Length: 119
Length: 115
Image (cartoon, rainbow over all chains, first blue to last red; front, side):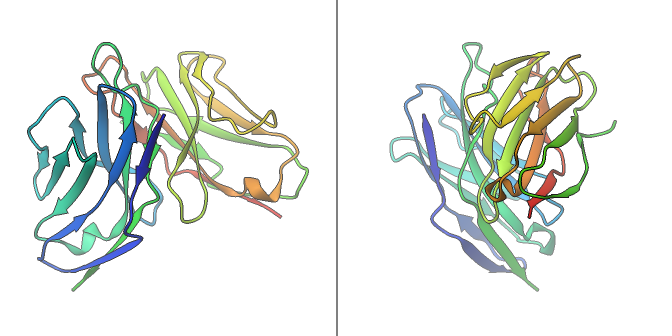
């Protein structure tokens, strides 16, 4: 079983500044994946970034990067040079890995963090 | 190509009625997932199909909920004797497990309101 906790219901940032969203998780799996998803008002979930637990190097995707602390079971998202289009609900999620190393698919989500970007 | 589509986008029904929610996955995606998202919460897993069969239905809350995928493409989530607590956004996602990460692509969801 897995649990994902996001302790920040809301965050705000000024345009062009940097913001960090927090996530902690718990899992009994030895191999797993962690994700950050963005959900704008249109409701469509969009994958922002993924991290494979066995990889020590933190994942980065353009302005988005993670700080993965495996021992602490922490997985925070840093958004640099924030843009108005980054405003959305952000969800942290976890899935176990298949024997072949891919994500099993069934995602466990946190409660979400609403990000507001001020011009 | 087209993404995951869900119909209807909104559904209002009365307590006790039966509803069907439809999901059209991305063409060629063999895996399909249903999630339920209550207001202000993260999505909760309901069921996962690999092809026509339910590979994992551990998230279905009770026997009023049932899902099918008879031809391995379109899926229908069926809810019998709806209750006000069933009100939520129902999200569908699909993926291609043969890919390197089995990334899920989500549809826009169906907002179900039970009066």
